[in-house]
Amino acid sequence: MRFGSAIAIAASLFAFSVSSAQAQSCGSQYTVASGDTLSKISYRAYNSGQRWSLIYYANQTEIGQDPSMIHPGQVYRIPCPDDADIQPASANISATPQQPRAVVQQTGGITLVTADDYRPFTDRALPQGGLITDIVRTALTKDIGGDDAKAINISWVNDWSAHLNPLLSRHAFDMGFPWFRPNCEQYNDLDDPAKFRCDTFHFSEPVFEILVLFFARRDAGFQFTSDDQIIGKRLCRPAGYFTFDLDKDGRNWVKDEKVTLLRPQTVDECFEMLQRGEVDAVALNEFTGREAVNKLQMANQVVAIEKPVSVLNLHVVIAKTHPRAKALLTHVNRALKDIKGSGKYGEIIDRHLSAFWKAQESS
Image (cartoon, rainbow, N blue to C red):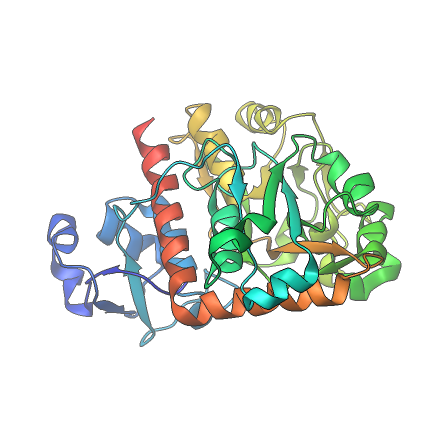
């Protein structure tokens, strides 16, 4: 989120054209000026205000959790949009934990489970199996080689509903990814599936932070700068998707029926309802939302609101009853820390998000 190559855009480039900004060499930084937004900076860098999240993910430590709140004087790295030199995933992806070889031998090998069709995070058709697969694989294979690399395997089971229960809860696999962590500290306010998740699993340190955004019609004047503005709105989120973020921190939009939440079966149906004016906004993670908008050819009609509904973390999960649960959790957390500290983590983020945007804008 905060490493890798960058497009050099200094504060003086406000007077330059977009093509001048794009002509700069990668590796420099941009200083925020008064009146800037990420959308404006994105437009100058990429000739597209909608690519602002590329800048956000590259500078999350500096910006914080609200991309609509940036401040003059902050210095951002602007990722290069064409840095996507990654290879397609193989059908069988193996991984090895970021530990000394002796640890791999002591644990007797590690198996992980994920699935396709969760772009850009996991899908065998994506380069390196997707963003999260690449992060996990890279972390767990670092400094391990030879026959020990074969001791760890990432398997693909294309039934997400079976992963947590029974596959992981009954130890058919050691770990699974990527999964959201509910706010387990607000245990009494959680619905049953969220309680099961909190009760049953350990969560790794965050693998990736994801923005959940409102998608609204450009001509509707939809505003979101505070929670109170959402009271009385009609929101759409497909059936089966989590809703705990809509009630977090006392907002209680769903719990207290402050909003009308419509739950069709598919993401596409949500956006079709938005197009017909049957809902005021669709609340989805930005990648799923943007893919749907692009697929339905609604980019000129729909805008992603810059202030997030929530910022949620994706994790590796391990059943608390697993006989090696604590050891596995320690291993994966150390591996993630190592690649984040080395800069490799940020390079992976840059490549995959650039590839995601290129795919969106070329289709």
